[in-house]
Structures are given as structure tokens and as C-alpha cells.
Length: 477
Image (tube, rainbow, N blue to C red):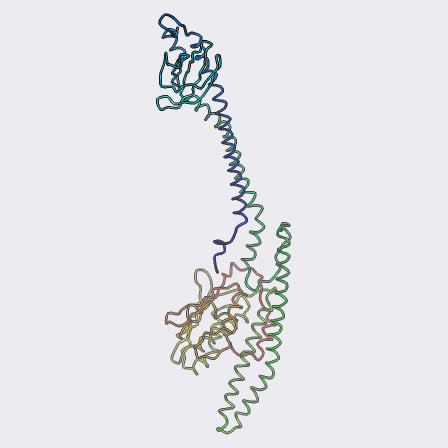
């Protein structure tokens, strides 16, 4: 079966991607907004403090015999420019634009009217700075530049204070989103689990009483489809049962008349009649197998109490039933019987074993061997039949349990129903049929049953009355 999870769209994944990506976009927008607000606050706060020393210096410019000069002592200048985190530098330009004091590395300030001040960004000694420029009434321009350490620290503090609750909210929202979507889609998971737990023949309606309204209509449609399939299945089973039942009586009469005729006919025509008798036996065998398969499937859903069945005793009795045919075909029919008990229907299990032995004897050439095995393995009872025949190719092992399927080129006559009946009976007992190669290269069919202690006292099986009706006139296998 292809891996649908690898290529099918997922509602849960789609919802999570949409909601989480939307949440991340909102967080990113909140971060951008917080950064803008923080930068505006930091710029406004520190620009005001940067303007004060510029105004102070502009008020202390004096023009003397030696030209304009800053009338502040060096100690006063250092006090104005002192800062524990940032570096401050100044520049004073005369009305004609020449630098008369401070550093010459500042770029020329923008045009300003007397008494006007400006704030702008610049670069000083390859470091970004914030510059405050003031033009005095005399036309002198004082510029003070400050590095951005305090501003960046304040920006990050504001962003951290603003985004911490946002991130906590986003994380909580992610967890709640994941939990909400998982709980919201839980009904779909329950429906999926119900469907995966079913066998291929379980066509009972899906329990939709707790299903949400979004999937209730889909479940209702699916239940209607299952109802139609159940009806078609019942009609098919009824047809098989009726056809097989109607065929059994005339076939049994024809078989009896041919046997009587063989006793009276001369040897010259006895060969032709023997062929007709063999064909009648095959047709009768097919009719009985069809009836068994139809009755076994029709019993699905009926509840009867199971009983302990001794697989070793069952196998021992079956070997005695088949030893005559094995001797006639020059096949060594042996057994390795260990103690094993299961909860099941003895008559159905008898038919299961008969079909396995019949298949093994049909496909094993003269001089070969067929072995019936029972015992316990890993705490579970099992039954196996292995042969020294040509074996079943690995690619065909999953198909030989289908009705009327036969591997071509075997040269053995058969109806293709034997292993289908085995599979049906195994499923009815919650057992697992495994087909693989035997140590001799032939075929080994193993049926692993659930441990007796793990089985419920009630299970689905065919009633003994139905199987007893089947066995009247039925052939082995």
C-alpha cells in the first residue's frame, strides 16, 4: 500500500502552518513597532540632553582682539562634555563657515536661521554619532556630537520590556493552538482508528454519535455506502449458498449412478465413464467448498460461545482421515504434535486443517512428505502444515488466499478456494495465516492463534448447527 501520509494534504498541518505563521508575522510586526517606538523615545530623550551643552557653548562665544573665542575654562568644557557611557565632541564654526574651535571632523551642519537648532545623524572617527547644532544670533554654529551607546541600551531595554509579554503570549498561543487543533481533530483520528482496526469483511456502520457536525455528513454517507456493500455481500453469499446447495444433490446422485455404472460396464468403456466420475467428484468438491465459504462468511456477526479445542487431538484425527490418500499418492504423511489449545469452533478448525492438508497432498509429488505440526510459540498456540512440493513464489503468497486464484503452470487440478477458506476461518478466530517456504523448499502454511488467556469468552464464529448441515455429504478439504 502506498504511503498516503507522505503525499496527502493534512488539515492539521495546514491549520498549524497558517495559524503559527500568522502569529509569527504578528510578533514580527510587534517587534518592528516596538523598535520604532523605542528609537523615537530614546532619540527624543537624549536629544534634549544633548542640546543643553550646545546652547551653553553658544552663549559663551566672545569676540575679542584675537577674534571670536569660547569663553569657557577647560574644566568647564570638560564638565559640559563629560559622560560615563558615550564620547562627546564639539565644533564651533564662524558665520563664514570656518572652524574656530573643537574638532574639524564633523560634516558641515545644515542651513539654519539665527536662534534655530537641528538634530541629525553623522559619523565621527568612523563611528555613528548623533549631532545637535545651534546657530546663535551672532551667526556662530555650535555642534556637539555624541556616540550612541546610551541610546542603543535604552532602545533594547524598551524592546525587551515590550516584547517579553508579547513572546510569552505568543508561546502560550502556540501551545493552545496546537492543543486546540489536536483536540478539534481528535474525532477524525478516532474514525481513522476504527477503520484501521476493521477486517476487510467488517461492514458494520461507523459509530457517529459523538462525531462533530463537520464530519457527521461524511460519516452518514460512508455508512450508507457500507450498508449497500453489506446488502451486496449478503446477496452474493446467498447466491453461492443456494447455487452450491442446488448443485450438491444432483451431483451426489450423478456420482452414485456413475459408480454403479462402473461396476457393470465392460472394460472397453469403463475409462470414459471413469473420467466422468472424476469430473463429478471435482464438481462436488467445488460445490462443497463454495457452500463452506458462503456459510462461513454468512456467520460473520453472529455471537456464540467458543470452546476449548485441542489442536493436537484435532490434527491427530485429521491425519487418520487423510493417511489413505497419502499412501495412494506415495507421500509420507507425518506429524510433530505438541500440546496446544485454542478457543474456537472445532468444526471450522477441522475444515481449516483439512484444506491445508488437501493442498499439501495435491501439490507434493510422489515420494515427497507432508508434515502436520502443532505446538506453542512465544506463548501462543499455532498449527502448521509443510510439504516438499514446488513451493509458492514469494510474489504470489499474498494472492493465493484470494478466491479462485491459482498459480499458473502447476499442473495440479483445483478450485482455488482451499486457502481462501483457510484465511476466512483464521480471520474468524482472530488468527494470522502466514505462507512461506519450508526448510525443504516447499511450502509451509502456519496459523498463529491468540493465547487462550487473552481471548474473550465471546467471539464471532459460525454456529455448530450451520457447519453440521454443511458436512452432510461434504468431501474432505
